[in-house]
Image 1 (cartoon, protein in one colour):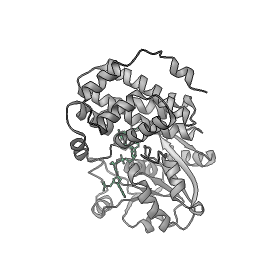
Image 2 (cartoon, helix red, strand yellow):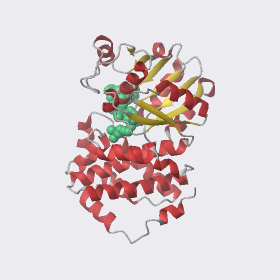
Image 3 (cartoon, helix red, strand yellow):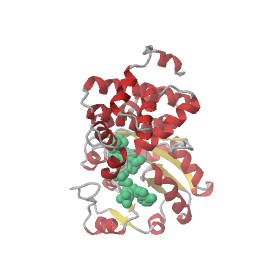
Length: 342
Ligand SMILES: NC(=O)C1=CN([C@@H]2O[C@H](COP(=O)(O)OP(=O)(O)OC[C@H]3O[C@@H](n4cnc5c(N)ncnc54)[C@H](OP(=O)(O)O)[C@@H]3O)[C@@H](O)[C@H]2O)C=CC1
Ligand SMILES: O=C(CO)COP(=O)(O)O
C-alpha cells in the first residue's frame, strides 16, 4: 500500500484516484476549492466532474497542499496544462523529499513549445525530483470511473520508474497499463490527438459524415507522426495506444470535450462562447497554437493543424476551412511515410 497524492480534483484526477484506491492505495486528492474538497470528504462524491459516482473512502480530499504531500513519494499531476507551472511552483515550496511525478495531462505549452515532462524538469529543482513518468492513452474519465475496461501506456526516461507506476495503476479487472520507452512519442501523441478531435467535431457539426471523419483521423495521424518523428519520437508509437488509440477515442466519443467543442464550432457557435460553456478544460485549443508554432519552426507540413489554427485564432469560417483542405494540391499518401525516418 502506497500513499499517493493526486493534484487536481477534476474529472481525470478523480477517476485515477478511484483506480488507485481500488488497487489498495491511500489517495490524497488535492484541490484548490474548499467546498469541493468538503464534498469529497463528507459525501464521497465529486458531482461537478463525475456525476453519480460514489468515491471509495480511501480517497481523502485535501485543501492544504503541504499536508497532502507529507510523507508522499509519488505525486500524480492532473491539472490542465496551463495550470501546471503554477501548481509545481506550490509543490516545490512544500516538498521535502524527492518526488516521482506522474504527468497525466495532455498538452504542449504555447510559445515555449515544451512537453509537460520538460516543464516538470524545468520547474522542479533536481533535489526534489526523482523521476518523471507520463501516463497517457485512450481513457475517458467517465468510463474509468464506471470501471469499464481501459488501456493506457506509461513512459519515462527511467523505465524502472515507469514500471513502478505501471504496477501502481495496473488493475487486472479494468485498467491495463502498458509501457513504452518512447517518452516523446507518448507525450506528443496524447497532445496532438486533441487537435484532430476538435477538427472531427467541426466536420460532425457541419453535418458531414463518416468519410470526412475517417479522412481527418487518418491524415491527422500522418501529420501527428510527421511532427512527432521530427521531434525525435519513434513513428511506431503513433500506431499504439497513445496515438491511433487515443485518436479513435477522442474523435468518436461524446465524452470528449475536444470533440464537443469542435462540434459546437461546426454548428456555428463562436470559440469564446464554446469555452465559457464547457465547464471543463479543452486542451486542444492551446495545443493547436503550440503545434502550429512547432510546425513552422520545424518546417513540418501540418495542413489540418494550420487550418484549425486559422479557425480558432484568425476567425476563419469552418466551412471554408474544410473547403481549403479539400482544395490543396495533389499529393501522394505514402510520401509522408517515406519522409519519416524510423
Ligand atoms: N477527463 C479525461 O477523460 C482525461 C483528461 N486528461 C487530461 O488530464 C488533464 C486534466 O483534465 P481533466 O481532469 O479532465 O480537467 P477538468 O476540467 O475536468 O478538471 C481540471 C481540474 O483542475 C483544477 N485546476 C485548474 N487550474 C488549477 C490550478 N491553478 N490549481 C489547482 N487546480 C486547478 C480544476 O479546478 P476548478 O474546478 O476550480 O476549475 C479542476 O479540478 C488535461 O490535460 C486532460 O487533457 C487525460 C486523460 C483523460
Ligand atoms: O484524453 C482524453 C481521453 O483519452 C480525454 O479527451 P477530452 O479532453 O477531449 O475529453
